Image (cartoon, rainbow, N blue to C red):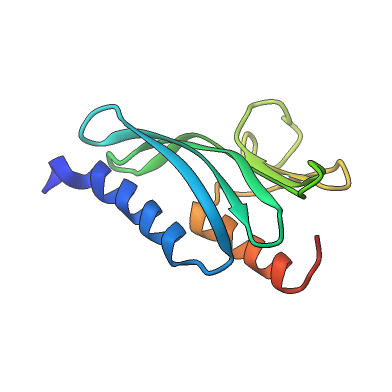
Length: 132
């Protein structure tokens, strides 16, 4: 069963994207780097023209499960940033360093590492409330 863990994780991401009605299209590349480690890179376009670009994760499923690296860059159709989650170590004053969220205003907030599902649910709320 352990051999299939990274494949199961990959499939769960693909299933999630396929199940969401506000997702217009997605392009996801999956790279297995061992039985428990994988790299995911992709782009998702939404029905309103906004997109999740530069979505990437380096995931390690060994206990404790961790995202070694991640970024979720969400933007309007015209390229304007709405938000970006990442763990690049460049905002040392943030309480959750290196984890943080870049805001449309240009500010940076403390943030734990979100899952792709959490990011997509946040996007769904913004789209449904027409807040972008």
